[in-house]
Length: 215
Image (cartoon, rainbow, N blue to C red; front, side, top):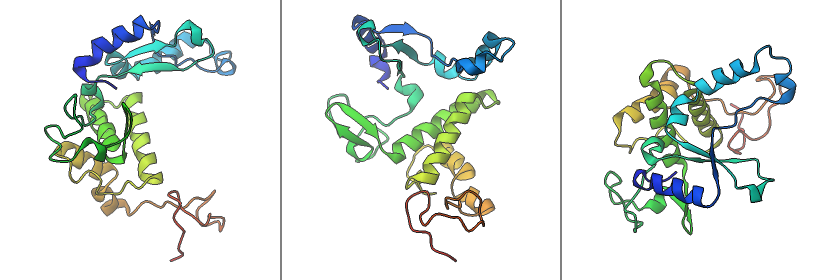
């Protein structure tokens, strides 16, 4: 992810470093393709579900000198990612972050910033809201929801994690689908790890690694 104002510069730098601009590789496994009557039609339908992501980002293959690298690099502008950013040459807060430094939103390793849970949840929630503007939830939107659900289940992401977010839409969206409003209707998430609830085969810890206490 890069700042919007640095997006074109970042693209040029990757191209100058012999990265190759391409399309996302969402090809199916060969053993699946061989049983499909029209593999290209299936791939076209899959890619259609990620149209918003593809239109808002640029994908690169690694340079030929890294021929063993099969991964792709996805460059995303921050207007799409919705991650909190401060001034370019400072770790102090930007407008909308109060007096909190960026280090409260990221683990920082040199010039690499890894978003912490709150920043990442807020990013996914806002991107999911953007995805819903066309009424139908896309495959990209479903992926975002799945990632949020996994974070709520396995990490210390509680129902109040977005309470300090200034975007009321994000607060309400998270509350209804995963937070307080959801729990008021469905009850707290059951985080026990088991092949079948009630089978007596539950593990001694839950998804977050906390000891399971019998009621």
